[in-house]
Image 1 (cartoon, rainbow, N blue to C red):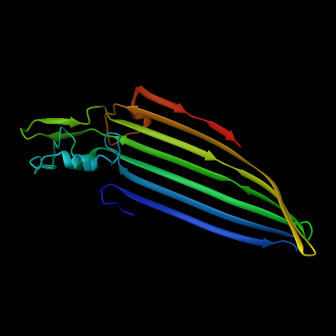
Image 2 (tube, rainbow, N blue to C red):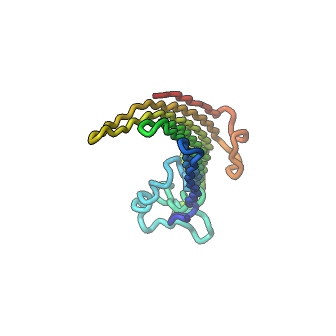
Image 3 (cartoon, one colour):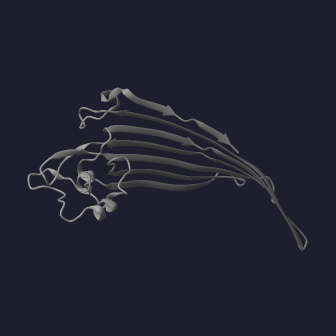
Length: 231
């Protein structure tokens, strides 16, 4: 769906399904699944996202134009022009994908005892591409400047999370004349592993062609962050 702010939109695609299968009189299976993909685009500006836009609007006196008649951007308030911020300050694209399954097997050992085993893997992937672009503006006295004050830059982030979940349950339910006894015992384990990678470059000569290899090699910054855990 489109947002109220230009160059902002959000797209989501989701699929859900669930199936049940009775293999034998005592053995049954169930499979549930959920798949989702989200894509968010928004102005990135000076690296603070679209949140400061309304603050910029409140700060600018009404005598400062957002756009001059010749098509150049106005100064705004000390260079912070929300219209220029949206149109030329750079964009942030974030794509998140999620896959989650739940597979269960139930075996009826006897009329009063059954066993259930569950395997539920989850996978989440996130990729973001954020650009900070400098733009020129024209002041009331016809002098020019650029905003933001810092250099232009590109920031890429990638992250993956895998969480397989294991569970085993034994259920006891037996009736003795007028009395009933129920009990349940089980164990479960969650194995979580996250890993991320980020890279950035600065000082781009061509702001319309911002890829890692075209940035200033002296400003490269790469990092990763593996985080395994289990409980």
